[in-house]
Length: 351
Ligand code: SAH
Ligand code: SF4
Image (cartoon, rainbow, N blue to C red; front, top):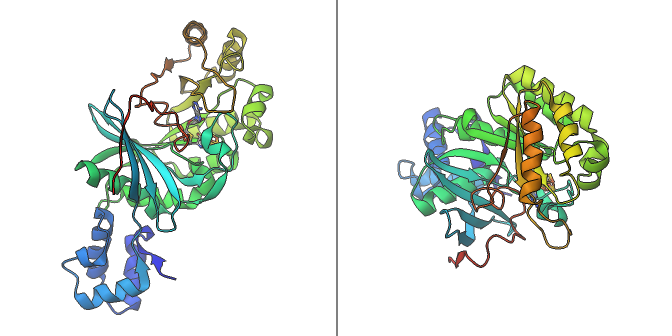
């Protein structure tokens, strides 16, 4: 079985190369080629044919092939369906802002967490992505658009903290100077709240932005929509969040999908405000995106206004996110079954 060479750190490549009797500068060259997005060893023009052949025999270079591409007419957001060498597919979204390009990538094929409002959760779990497959999503988007991506959000399909080691490896690779050089401050990671992993992440003191998908002010409502809450109750989760803030000095952002009649009452807003009081945080309210078969509807505009004003009066900063391609449809992990502006979007079939 060939090995996944693009998931290797430069130091690991150096060790592999030393074992093959190759000098360490060769490892540096190959590392740079891999992280620049080459798809075959033959593109490594400063590497001898003989070594290229040796590498080909031992390793594979993972890449993300574009199966499908949707372009929003609204705001230039592009949604990709990528496939990997075993035929598994994930979605990723490229968004363009004034300050540059942001990519929202997947970390797993499917998800084990089973949130009832989420299309990914409904379609089950297939496997974890490797670090190189996360990088390959970014590389494919850069190449397809001839751009450089400056920001990454781990908010596509999957629960990043359920694939902890590969995600950490991805963060190190993507942040490396010879790699894409995207620093932690330009990366956001969203989690449904795997408490032990939040502690583990906090102890690494990375400067990334942590988003926590809260979506409810108490255990009764949260356990109904997010099965993970039965394992880690809301107070335990918030305790882990406070620890994260202390360790990293970073503000946490709480995601709250507003579901009509489920979690959007004034009482819910008051309860949420009292739970979050004193925390360095920000609340993002998002009208829930209706996924077929869930029966959930978006909260009404007035409901959301009332909810946000209660939070603000309690001193909690909150925003209501727009529902364009650039936000919820794009970044909620419900991509494969998505209802992403089907009518307005042009569909481009690529080879
Ligand atoms: N598994 C991680 C990251 C991927 S999901 C997590 O749950 O945080 C990215 C975000 O989309 C999460 O905040 C998730 O709760 C939200 N989401 C999923 N389905 C949604 C829907 N139908 N409407 C609104 N937000 C949704
Ligand atoms: Fe998984 Fe996140 Fe979807 Fe929940 S919301 S099922 S954790 S991808």
